Amino acid sequence: MKNDKDIFSGLESEWSRELAELSALVESNADGLYARICKVQRARKRNLRVVACSIAAVVLAATGFWCYHVLKPMPAAELPRLAALPSSVENEESNPTSLSLQQAPSSPKAARGAKSVAGSSFDSVSAQSPNTNSPANIVDTRPFPCDDSAAPRPTVVICNSLISISAAGSADSSYVRFPAV
Amino acid sequence: MLDKDHYKQYNELLARNHQLILRICFLYGRHDMEYRKDLYQDIAVNLWRGMHSFRRLSKESSWVWKVAKHTAIDKMRSRAGHPDIVSTIPADVAFAESPHSQRLDDILEAVAHLPDEDQLLVMARLDGECYEELSKRMGLPPELLRKRYSRIIHKIKEMLNE
Image (cartoon, rainbow over all chains, first blue to last red; front, side):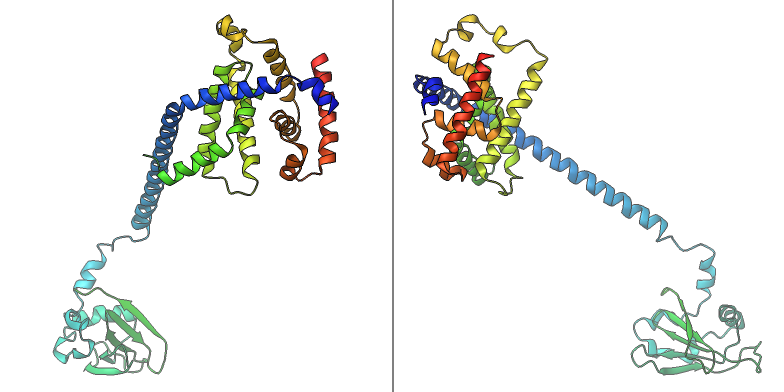
């Protein structure tokens, strides 16, 4: 403690006085401090808004890119083929088991169009309930004009916007989706 | 404009650490009250900025000390390119100080060159805190603090004589 007194003796009061002086000066300037803090806060909010807008812009751009490149519109060449599909599809969404014989493709032209999709001849066209997975209503059992009786005969099932085509005696089937017209 | 609760917390933090910030202002205040006042405001603003990210992993006083010290050093650096502030203010303001005040400023300038813990120890002793109180605050035995303080005083004397 001897050293303490050597260096700080007589300075304690000076120290306290100066501290009090600065403290009073700082307190008299409290309004200035408040104004500066408000300014800082405004700048921070502005920065947050800028960051939020930037993120939103990036998300929008990414969504736009995805929509343009992934969800491409259907090629125009596909439309005539879709138009040639039977009109029975109209009511198929609401009640797939209500397809009737009269609504099945009757013209050879339409049938040939369907045949080209399957790559083989057809034996029958039937509607199928989506829940039971069983044929609900056989709508056409006549062979198509270009039928080759020696070839295996596939089954065509129309159900909920899907045309299922499977080879005779096979569990595997291909699906073609078409929109409700 | 400001969140009232947040501003209240900030004011409480400032009140708790008022003395600590004043000490820093004296240590790095360049013998000038106006500069010290500005420095106090800069420190207070930086505390407001940093309050949101303070996770209380360290003691509040340690965090305040660090923020205050870095602000003071940054301010000194930013003024380094400009003419010395003491030479730009009127002589009656800059030098109308008692011999005691001059000596105190010289000592404080020397203290500013010490490590953080030594600075805290010297300032606390200047404020009149006893070793027992300091021992509780710093988590060191009073005897060790006494010895360390003697060594610091010796070092300050050497610095003042140079």
